Image (cartoon, rainbow, N blue to C red; front, side, top):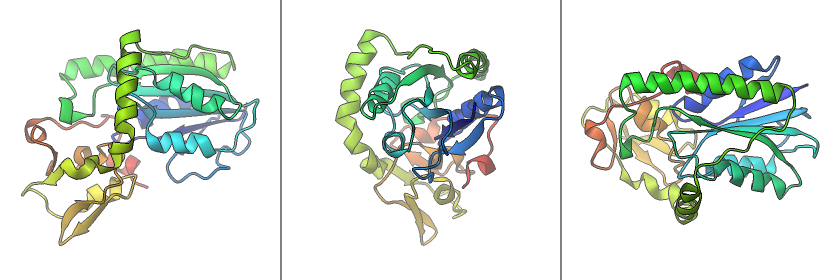
Length: 257
């Protein structure tokens, strides 16, 4: 079975998850979602999407990609939704997006990893982070067995209150995300290295007089704040005192185009 796994990642959790999954699927091709064209699946028998939950739903770039990717009706489709404990209705939403095209989400898994959305708090104690990573590794391995066999699996979701409350918040916030970069700022530690501009998947940052400026088509992946080597980029008032996070097994070079 020819398998392609597309990944979308800002700070490495989803890239790591996609790598762990692809390693369990013999011969699976691993491809970045950003920049891929409509024929990127190449007639694959099985296609997977691995992505973070953004604002309790499918990120805009993932939604747009799924809506235009050329897939055959019989394609076996699977997904991993990576989050910090609030998957809500994300995988159900993905299934609905596919259903509008006559496609079926055969299996969708909720993968919990340390939080990278540090404006709302840090990633947590090191011991807890490692426990989440190992639990995720085991769950991805179990999911890979179902996917490799081409079987129908679960389409996982959060409890009813998440599906109700957070789906409403997703719908309210979805169109606001591109301009949420107004809360980014840069402190005196910036040395004009340009890592933020290079790692941004949306090409939303440019350096002007050696300082980053955000261009209001943000994806809220937080790659800029998490990968800044001097921790000079901030978001709002809380992040100067908050520990940065990216997946410990993913490097900056892994994230660069």
